[in-house]
Length: 468
Image 1 (cartoon, rainbow, N blue to C red):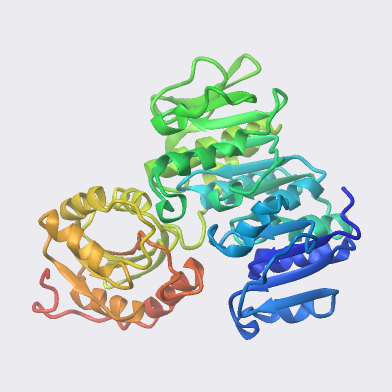
Image 2: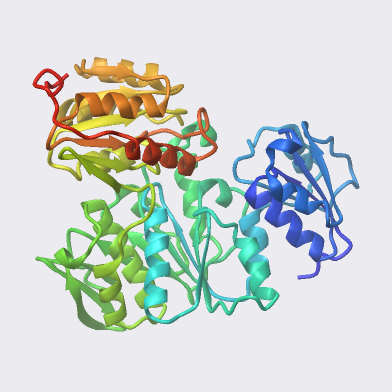
């Protein structure tokens, strides 16, 4: 694809925006990058762009008139209702996500993973499987590294990528046109980002766009146990390959029979491994493991490599990550749990009493089901951030009263330490976005780790060990 001489506006100059601007400039595109933030808040990457023919517009968004631009690239975090996007739509200027841009220039097959929860774990597990198999796979996307950045390196000869494993968000899928994964993986659908998409139907339909441009030569890997996912599979043009924790698919698919994981490929049924051999814990991680196994087997990875990887993959940072055990109390970093459904899965993964630290920027999902689970499973609830009043209201409506609030995450950790005793789990699983207090969920998780590392152990008094 030749963009030389074209004029492009990149809106949103965080990681993906900077990567897109840099790539476009090297393709001979006249690039302008725009962000409402002041330039000094955009990080050192924005300074590097000044070495290229990229003009920066900061502190505001530009006005767009006919003839100004041939293409608009919009970063995932940019709201859909801003005037430059509305103007581009009125003027019929193509609007792409960075994912769409990368997909047009990537020459290798793409495995794309989407869904409400489990994307990062499944994407990371796929990368781990390919590494174990000796296959050079590029892992990128919503997981933290812009795909276009890695595609640029590969085109320059800096890497020898054979295929891409890409985590894909609904925000990125909103602005695809031709993006086509050879293997698309849809893990699950639950309420999330309703503040952006307006309602569940819009959200689910956007997620299902993952399969929109596939052909019968491609594969759609999907969750047979998720009724919402099944609603969107009838019109998928790719070959379908289902996964299920509750049964063994009769035709092409992977599932569970007793304690065995069985898959069918090219008409042949084969045992992969036992469920108890999967290292990462929890029912939801069994789903993630089945999805990753399905995609890797379809991509040609040997069965033994897949089984060995499932048995040795340690999990990912910030997703049910064990940080420390102190005085018999287990501290778990689940900062990646940014919606209520993720918190539900985390709460179901532990047997002991749980002190839950939650809150942040609410994304519009109902808290009713989570509040009921908190009443059943949580010893104490510590709230922080913008959503603290909403969580308190939902918990109290469910009959739960053991609620505390903390001004900072470090204060929340200190409070949890004071009220926890041997056998408890202190779980950071916010159920919210991090943007009210942190740059991203990673910074939030790092702050939690640091606070936990600073705790002092010692025998607690009877008074201190009392349940709140």
